Image (cartoon, rainbow, N blue to C red; front, side):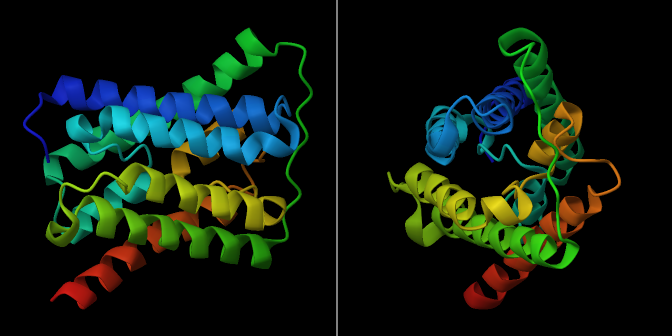
Length: 212
């Protein structure tokens, strides 16, 4: 982790996660970007990663924070503050989208088939965390300039591939924004939360097995 203060790291995590969630809620949930929503989301994630990667690691995702911690590249004392900040930022992004940017917008609730949606969230959360561990925490790729693009392209690929199946969250903070916006019911939220956390943990296990 960087030597920046805890305040700087948490501010960075809040801003990055908030803008990611805000973009998802406006571009996708409220359909301001139509079929281009995945590109808006991936673009926002990429620029926020480049803006904050050197400060906080630019996790912007509790599943990623868990994965990076299990991999051994995040201080234990940072885990709970990061996750709390990310979840608060996801909620904030949704509230801004709903009550400031599109107060008259219509939100369609996601209708999920548990099995396919669970599998989609598991697979692409794993892919996201696995790529992050390899391009942003590995000594062999240290100092590369492509890490932000690589991470954003995983999200873009996931959104285009399984967006209609699961909503393409891959991120508990984004799932919080979907719940806050009314796009995802609390009853169905386990279909996101469980595979996201499992996917992050599995990515760390695979990374460590490959690099031991």
